[in-house]
Image (cartoon, rainbow, N blue to C red):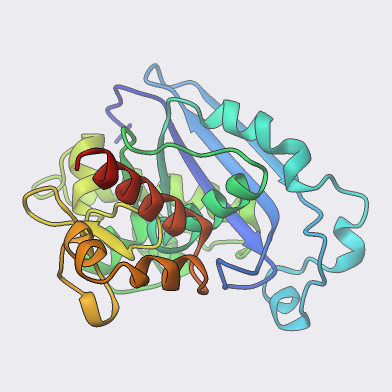
Length: 257
């Protein structure tokens, strides 16, 4: 089943130096842009992370320091990537929890604020886990009846994710709607205000902390009764995106007084 699109949608996958969104870096990005008329464009590029690629990570994706030594840094290609992503909805495999937060951090380091407030985000892994509880390779085998060759290369994983979503729409046609807004909502556990899910919107659309001692309490309420909590987060080991979102909420609260 082909996707029913109102806007372009980008399927993308990252290979990184590790899994820490705060400290690790992108070393490869691959994305497939699918247009409402069915046309497709794909790009794959390697990135110099300006740090050592740990051996445990290299064993997974096969990319070593020497492979990216002459590649551009993310900052050099950030504007071109942002231009490609402009106005497109986003999809990936475990993308809501990892790839999107990681990409957002890299953009912020390059002084580009990736605005996703009006984007639809589809996480194919969430759909898969709700239906079958497996990995991407198993999902590809299960839905597409093919073995995933070159698994853990960004390009192979990106194409596989695109094919899996289309196959999911065929298999679960009685449950899933071929509609990006529906798929975005279905593949989200929470409605995040920040990419890392530290701040979420409650059922009334109010920003609420989703961690720690103030979990479940509105951000504005916490900032009023415990102003030091803002400083603790700003000086703590939180993503730049989380800090940016919190600062915007704080500034909005100050101007409304």
